[in-house]
Image (cartoon, rainbow, N blue to C red; front, side, top):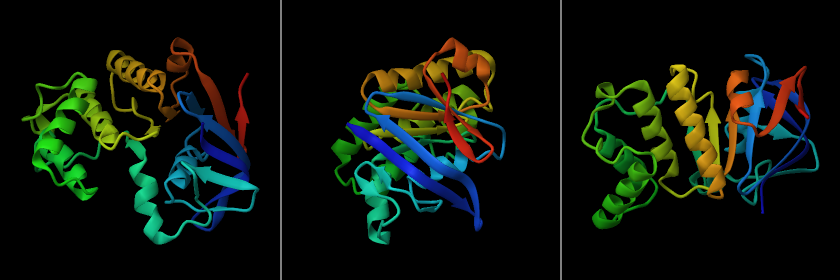
Length: 222
């Protein structure tokens, strides 16, 4: 099943085009690296997939069955619920525990039952190897542990698409390898994963499809 289908679209940001004539297909269970220099359009391309950066032109811009160029404002939360986002800088709420961070997202996306919330939090923490850290505050966790919590947060609503924007950028090499391995396991379980990175060693050590942003174009590497 196609998760992302872009055909000859332009990605705009701050009233300028950052990528032209973009075509990209991403299917269930597929892992794809997005590489390129800082400012080459990687983050903008990802943000276009959850309707934060506009697209124009082209033949098709479909994400999870939504036409992101014709999306109504009321449809944006429905689109975003199907997408898990992993940030480089974690963006955890510092005034609440790991459990509090996860519960906040669930309640914000319509979960009401205490037992269902407890079960889902336990499931996602177990999936990232952090089941015993639910009481910890973010500042009590290492960078790698925080990123695992961010991935757990991204998984809460069982998304079909994971967007990981430089998820190893603030981590030491060994921890970065663990995080990339975890993301690959999510793809193996059936999710589509698009990961932006500038770390070529990771790409070589965890081979997968590679798309490069260069000169305002998105090019597939062989």
